[in-house]
Length: 367
Image (cartoon, rainbow, N blue to C red; front, side, top):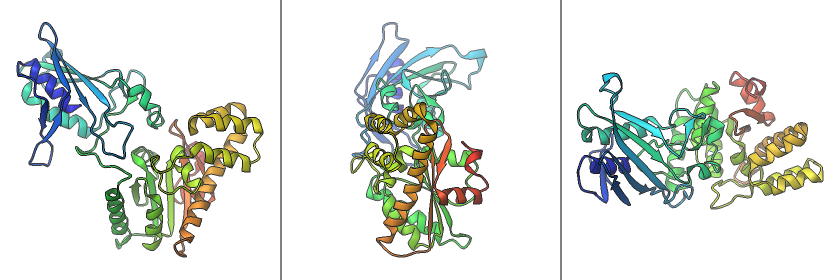
């Protein structure tokens, strides 16, 4: 996005098109080079567009080669306020904070945009930047954005310049280091929360459930469970989106979909064990996502839906404990807490309910 915005702005001010844009990054001496597909100046010379593609790592296929368009144009400063020289507009496929809301963009991404465009904008002018992700709305359906109030498309939530895959061995190594460092601190009390993903991290803080140490984890949950037990964790809470944690209920402890998915199959199996009516089991089995299955079953019988999803939370705790038993015996209690796509914490296992109370809340406070 930033590279495309810079390429478009450069041709807007009369510079020639550069197929590789050099970006200045915070806290880094060397610039990085980002390829641009094309940049076009519209007739009249007041508008330009540049197109780039996401260069995500091998384990991330959601945004791999995703096309990003950035339109730029000069606009008049509002009320002679020259400090606000940049106006960012969410175009088609870019997530907003509620319908018609502000662009969902991280502070880092906005800082990067300002850092690399300011020198190109002449004094007394204001630059309007509109970001468009043609496939953004479609791809957003495969994320949990909506659970956090982000609608209409993908959020621009980068927190660093280089992509780091949650499925990579390097990410596991980093998490193991952070886990052991936390557990070796003199003030560590034996309780820890594993939060699944960035969205879960935001929610656990918003709900005030961050009084004990938190570690945001990626897809390597199996090794991290073992490491937590080995490091002396006595109470471990697994906090995450139901579409992710359901995999643990099926005994899948590396949760990246390139290695294993099977979420609907796991849910169907649990529905059979709960003796749900055959018509509801068929509805679940025909669903394309966990959230779709939840909505469909709730529309027919909300009590049975709650029963099934509490079963998932319980199975997460049981299967995680069973997984640990393959590697040793430790005095650790594993709890689970699951939230849905509407940003509601709704289900826990027995251990998870007890751990929530210890953190100063209970499920009824949040559902």
